[in-house]
Image 1 (cartoon, rainbow, N blue to C red):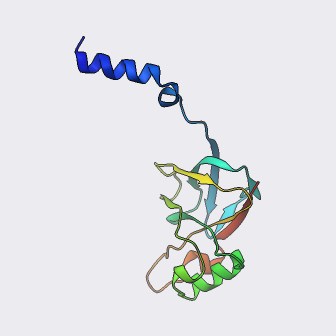
Image 2 (cartoon, rainbow, N blue to C red; image 1 turned 90 degrees about the horizontal axis):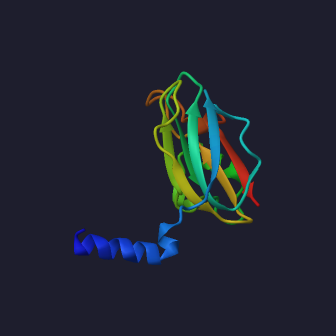
Length: 146
């Protein structure tokens, strides 16, 4: 066996934390046209993998973010729908998933959720440039992290 490869295997075996598989919760978000279907009201803190299933006829996304302290999720949605700069109402987004109509998005969003925080998801896409963003049509929700 190659000496470098032998050394790498020995280091990996001697360091159990490197060989462990990370444990994480899985949450599936179901989207329809202009709403999220039965979103969870709360999610456990810790490492969480989100998936997006689009049961609608339009392209949808799931933007995961946290409102800034003192700002409610419905206020964030109204501000975004009116075109306010996102940095005024939310912390930097944790990530985005996109799913074409009738499909499950091909990726997962892995996030370490913080206990006691409110997170929200929204779709900021438009069907056409002159149409309103999906968030303006009510496509947003929030959940608490316990």
